[in-house]
Image (cartoon, rainbow, N blue to C red; front, top):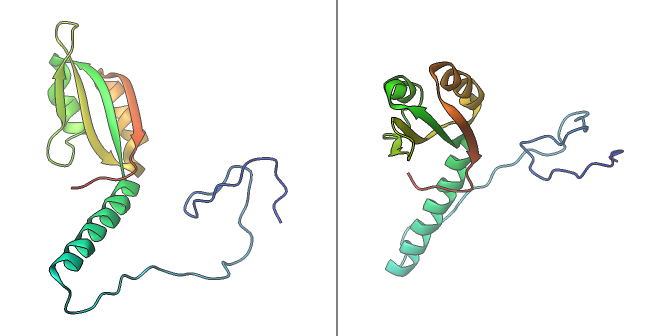
Length: 135
């Protein structure tokens, strides 16, 4: 029984504010994808599409997108903080000598990275959750 006027968060990984877990879980489980050894080409393609989609959701749970603006004179320092998966996206801004930067960072490190970016001179720092991705 939950005694809270707050909306219950149904995401099992994120506890709802104001709610406390008591006792051990009743059941722990995992999802397993089972497929036949020999599939037709069309079914094999369907399985591959499903696998890509599932991996995309799982990866998105571990990463967030960070966007920020910074002067070009501190871009090298900022890029060292946010190297991204392959490379950050850097776009010139209308304001001379400023750029917009976008990169993926690991979710648990996002707050620390925001602090580091602020210290090197980045501003307008935003972190956005991802729903799915393909890497």
